View 1 (tube, rainbow, N blue to C red):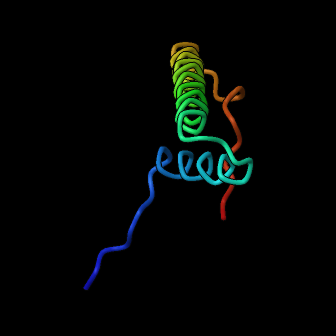
View 2 (spheres, rainbow, N blue to C red; view 1 turned 135 degrees about the vertical axis):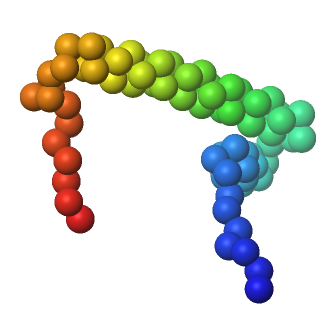
Amino acid sequence: MSEPQTTNWYKTLADNANSLCEEFGLSDTQTNRLRDFVVTVAKNQYRIGNKSGAAWAFKQAREGTAEHSPARVSV
C-alpha cells in the first residue's frame, strides 16, 4: 500500500510561482528571483504571525480570561 502523499507549503508555493512565471514567459533567472522573493516574504510573514499568535495566547493564559478567547465551533 502506498502512503498518502502530502505536499508541503514550500513546494506548493514554488510550483504556483513557477506556473505564473511560465505564463508570463520569464527567463530562468527571473523565475528563480521571483520564486525566492515570494518564498522569503511568505516565511517572514509566517514568523511574524506565529510570534503574534504565541504572544496573544500567552497573554490570554496569564490573564486567565476565557471571554477573550475565540469561540469554539463544533463541526
